Image (cartoon, rainbow, N blue to C red; front, top):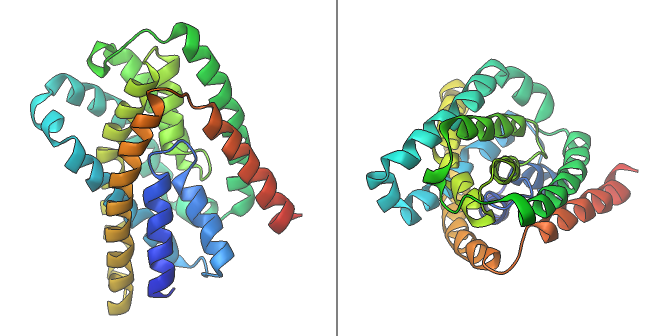
Length: 256
């Protein structure tokens, strides 16, 4: 991997982490198109640079993190299922699922269909305007949805947004809960992976991680603000259509 490729992957991560389109899936497909070998470092790189995007959320929502204990309760409850699944399936995820393009394409397509259906459901049944209005048991249910995102292509943000809407959160509140829930989820995933793999990195690889990390941070700052403005007048159907189109296009060009 070159510095230029690390920069490109950082941009892709920052653009897609908080959109319901699967950042991991886009990183895997982008790396394949760039010709970056999907070795152990690349897999760790794709996990670690997500922390750059997460720090963008801390920067934007720092006041809520410091003052809103009710939101934190819901975040911690929702984190439990993902933490358990991620810990138990770490070797399977990294050894067999990360880098599997067919898995990504199938889940991009199926996730797009489900996202469109959930968006239609939300037009009639989403009644909770604020995260703090969501009961803790429903927050736990959103966490169950998030745990599905250990499979590349599902999309962590997509799964949590769909789960949030099905639990009654408005589109904007579902998106914000997805943003905030990403903090403990991705921080834990990155810390655990670096603990397991970081000792194998060479000096130049740490530089590549730094480039991807910083690029993802600044790109995510821009993306989150733009995404919330978009949701003020639009739903998630466009992202569902995008997922389906990317899956079909990639399958037609690279897999068939």
